[in-house]
Length: 433
Ligand code: ADP
Image (cartoon, rainbow, N blue to C red; front, side, top):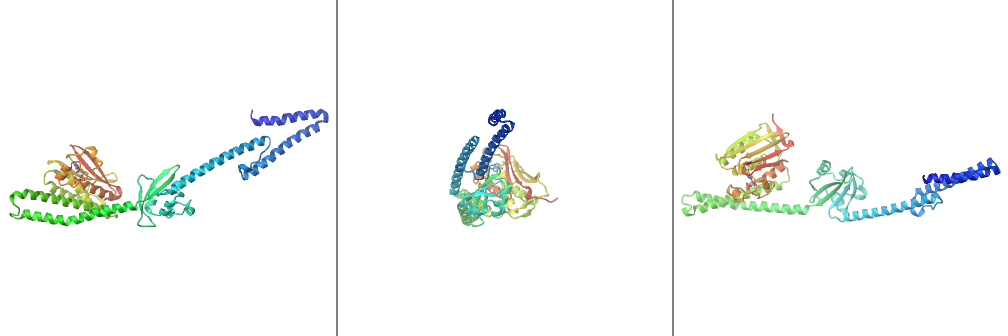
């Protein structure tokens, strides 16, 4: 039996017994009247405490809770305990939140907390500076109303936050920000924002230095190379015993010239922020040119074939694509022994378009594959040098492809051969049927 039943019995049984006792002495009216009076008094008492409870609930504070009497004492005491428990929990939560906010405010990086509708819930002072926000006014507003750059909005909506976004600050154009979105909780997001201008400046200085050094070296190297050539061509210009040294000098000077040219190409590709010129590139015609150059380079030592889809064109930079395709083909020739086979292909693969160069040359062991596009990474340094390599070819290819939103796929087996494929996205492919 529950408390409620006992309380009911405690009210009804003694009241009924009293009424029954009064019945023979004073009659039924007095007995029923007494019964009704006691029940009414009990009801009035409950209504009184109910009213007290209602008044307290309008402003429920532990200090003002009524003491109560009888069952109401138990009720108010339970409420008092619950209130104290809640107040304690609340103050613990508030101090935890304050600690978190103090820590996040002390961070040098910007932090913005967004809710599931991308509205600002909270941000720290660096984020206020970087995004031009004012927490007091902007809390609850969608972040896209305040940080309006298209790249940022696209990044926010793309739902792919694996890579951070680099963005020029709207307020200070000389500041570059790196923005990383971190999803958490139920559809909430954390924006972490870092000022990477000092690193960018350092990177630009490094690039400028390489470009300047390469540029400065170009002229003296051309002069030295030119004189060496003239001397070699002159009848009796070089004493017979020293001819071999002159040949070595010429070989090294042209190697240096190739290095300088590749370094200049790389720094040009890196430094220009602008995307490649959006011209319509007749890839089949370009590949005819690449094919002719390949024949010249191979000088009949390899069997070279080309299979191209004549209706497949690209949007991009003719000059850059020529350089990338030429590099892949020259590698195939240089790393395929005499008598080998080299196949060039230009075909659609689903909505994408693929330029591939396959050879049955020396191939590459799997542990090198992921590092091939690093500058100066060579599987076999002496072989690369002997064939006139600079170690920068694939790095140039990778940069050009990235500027065309394309990717480089490499399949290779040591001793069997390699296939290098440049895969272009649908957005860059044109069909001329
Ligand atoms: P390199 O001027 O040395 O050829 P690259 O950047 O063009 O520099 O290529 C990097 C390295 O990748 C080369 O040194 C070579 O070891 C390897 N490589 C590139 N293409 C091929 C290929 N078709 N077959 C075998 N190895 C290759």
